[in-house]
Amino acid sequence: MTGQQDRPDVKQRRLVNRLRAELGLVNVPPHVGSEIRVIAPRVSEQVARLLRHQPSYTALSVHGQTQLLSAIARAVSEFARLVEDRPPQAPAVDAILVEIVRAEGRPELCGAALHAAFETVREVTRVLWPQLPQARHFTAQLDLAVARYAERLCARTMKAQQAPTARRTTTATAGGAHLEGLLALVERRWGAQPVELFLTVSTLGEAEVPAPRGTAERDPSRPLRVVTTDHVVTVSQRPNRPPRHAGGTHSPVVVCVGPVPVSGIALVHDTALLLLRLIRAGVAAPPSPVQLRAPNFGFLHPYPSEASVRKIRELLLPLTGQGSHRRSALARTLQLRLRTAATAQGLARQLAMHPQTVHNHLTVLRTLYNSDLDFAEDNLAMQAAVDLVLPLWELEAAGRRTSTSQDGKKVPGYNNGTGGRDLP
Image (cartoon, rainbow, N blue to C red):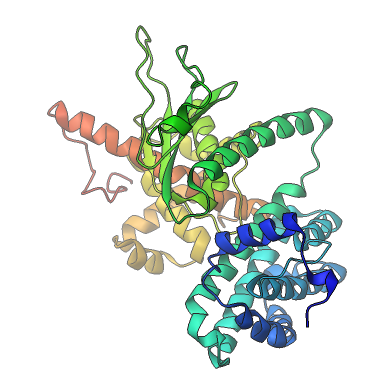
């Protein structure tokens, strides 16, 4: 029986509907959530037992471990409530997680622990849900929904835990208002229907002016465009390039990311804006426009702030000094090494390269960074930086190779795009 306290008001009902749509739960019957809620304590118990063997979890303090287990149990319960089509309870899970991160004072380690915890939740539920009479028919949808739920929680947690100064707070508020306005326009145009969009972020040109009010409503095929103080955001159902500026000596930097579902616009906006600012900061110089598929950073969230740009520049500085093809090859090897910690032989098999070539890559990388290729608390940040920038570097290398081949010159040592053949 449903009590008065379980009857959400209009605002709560909209929140639940939006969350269920974003997580892909619209077609999952609420009674499946009841089954999941019954076994939620069992899920939490098995997660706690498995996490004891996770180094990222044991790196937390004893109090932090206890608090994280409690928060994960709450998250499992809240996910079941969403499947049941019921509103989440207060306080929100991400608010609890933020307090844990702040108390520990080590965001990177906490982020790794969160990631390990939610991956363990998925491992456990993949075993338990197929055993349930109703949930077993929706295991694929539920697993994807858990992944999206975890990504959302982790992104909100890591974003909220930062303690900005008064100046940064003002900037963040303005940026948040701009993004909220963009999301409102997207929702008005496409609603929650499963449509894939392209989001384009470009530098602000002299001729850029906002579209007249009501234009988008009169012409549904017209892209949504929002002009800010230093860049232009365009959302459309097909890749969109900003118009050329007459009399301009330099083409604007253009980053087009997609296709992406409506629910992913906020994350892709921040990713595209960070890419734009990295290009303007000189981290990469790919041919414009840059067209990419929406990258997946798991629980990490790209922050397009000045601090993030500086951090990525510092982490990638030793690589940015290399030639374009050499840099891409080294970055691909480093990316896989950070992700797997495999030997040169193992990396060679996964990269489909000669073991000696990979050994040469590792030798150069150890010279550029350190003998263990260990970045301590910046390990996660380094991996995210490489994941983010490597596509830009590969586009830059491909552009230069195309330009060189058009001039009738051969690129020394470059073999079928594998990169690294010209390394010592």
